[in-house]
Amino acid sequence: NAGVMQNPRHLVRRRGQEARLRCSPMKGHSHVYWYRQLPEEGLKFMVYLQKENIIDESGMPKERFSAEFPKEGPSILRIQQVVRGDSAAYFCASSPPVEGHYGYTFGSGTRLTVV
Amino acid sequence: AQSVSQHNHHVILSEAASLELGCNYSYGGTVNLFWYVQYPGQHLQLLLKYFSGDPLVKGIKGFEAEFIKSKFSFNLRKPSVQWSDTAEYFCAVKGSSASKIIFGSGTRLSIRP
Image (cartoon, rainbow over all chains, first blue to last red; front, side, top):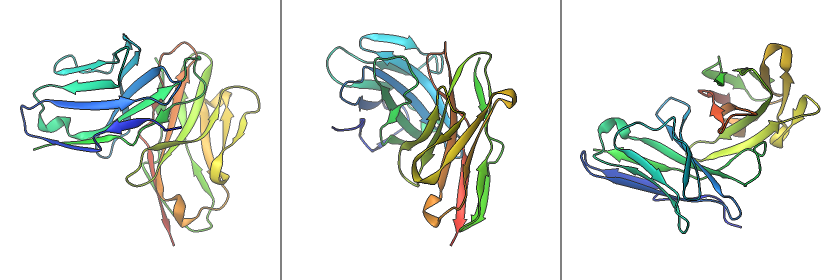
């Protein structure tokens, strides 16, 4: 039973390009969460999605960032016109469709470097 | 709103020393509490969790944590650390009516062999 799969593991983008980060949740999990980890900082919540729905995007920057979790396929975190400050590790987590004390299962993360 | 504070940013211990990492949370209702560990270059793994019942929770690798409701605390302990415990440790909270888990800023643990 594969865990949470994120790809790519490492992504290098030039300023102004687009970054697309993908996350496939664990089998049987229908809730997906995206977190960003900046160097020397903790994990900051970005967005919580269920299939075809954004449930909570309170941590998402208002501009350039978007997320989706379509009916088929992985969840995508999209960053348009990347800037140096977007360089970070982006972690995806998933949880089962039962209210919440199970904790999350995390993927290995995508390390985005903007040059 | 829920929040988590980890006051120790970096802890350095010798092998076999006892460990206690502090965690305080802020939330007005029922909470679920978690400790996650992140080994160098790896993803977060769940160490232990509390959601009800016995406030003393035992996790993997000899770790335990105690939920003290009156102090809004959930400190992580281990009686005797090993070099392999070198990692970053994150405390996290999810309020019963909240939609997501909130993480503390983490405590980096370094163990001297």
